[in-house]
Structures are given as structure tokens and as C-alpha cells.
Length: 109
Image (tube, rainbow, N blue to C red; front, top):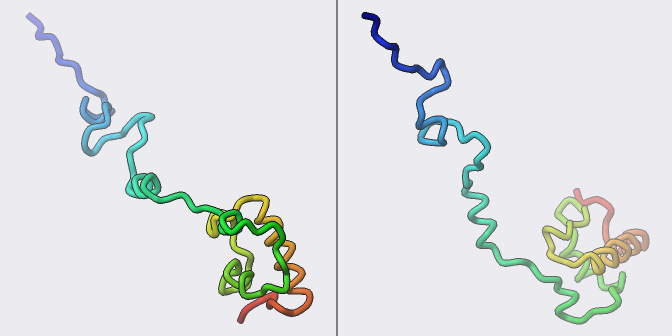
């Protein structure tokens, strides 16, 4: 007599979209991005001070410190330069002393 209705998805999309198919949501799954793939291939930076076995970082060696400062005059982070935490603390102190004695500028215009 009555025909049985076929089930509908009620606005939730098709089965393909629920499982992460083309054009649908991923529902908790993370899509792989190009940046993630590139980061996996990048070589890890090593601390240049550890490689050269430098124990003390001299504030008078401003040529070495200039490489650790951006073009605006800011101290570059460990992530950018690749220095270890121990040497980054020494870099900060040396740069601040060199700025105070006017070997390095506070700001670059």
C-alpha cells in the first residue's frame, strides 16, 4: 500500500562529505597542509656557538652580534637564529651591553 520512504540525510550532506570526501567536512581529521609537509623536510638548525665551542660571548665583538639583530634593531629569536637557550641568554646580555656602550644601535631607521 504505502511505499517506504528512503532515508535522507536531512541537510547534513552526503555520505562522502561526512567521511571527509571531496568538498565535505573532515569531522576531527586534520588535513595535511603544504606548510606541514615542508616543515617535516626542513633541517633542524644547530647553535653556532656550540659548534664553535664558545663559552663566553663578548659584547665588544659587535660584528658577530650584528648577525643576531634584525634590520629594525630587534634581537632575533632562538627559532630564527637556531641558537640554544643557554647561548641565547648570553646573546641578550651581550647585545644590551653593546647597545648601552653605543657599539650597536637601539633602533635602526
